[in-house]
Length: 197
Image (tube, rainbow, N blue to C red):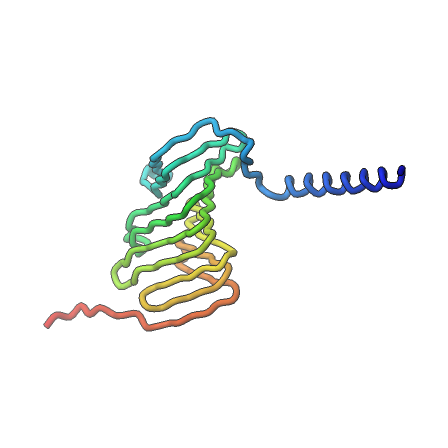
């Protein structure tokens, strides 16, 4: 009987230590028991850069703010940016079923983790064709102008299609990287002629 009690105590101690380690390693998301301090429906937020220019607009059907860590849960979010001629990029919108918005305490940098049916669309600009990215998960780091995921993504630009895992889309460097299991069907980009007859 004592041996059974000691085995149960050892098992409970191991489980508790594992849970404590997991809670220290992973960022905490509010649980259903946590209560939001406010809920907003039909919300539209605009984030401005240091120069006072709009860097992106975030709209959602519902926003729930959690005071414990300052995070916000969003239902049916859309993150939109305007056309950027300096970056040679068309207007962009990212849609999903839900997202978490967090802000890093030290740097005040924001992170938006979008999930479930994520679709990024970017309009054509000059000779650059439109871009579509589909995935179940995308992380947007707007202050670093990065979009990334470890999940499977499907990318379409013009008639070309790429599929793979581990996307890093660096808008500042204008690079797109797929890290694993890449499959591609590539077609030449259609060129527009500036000559008139």
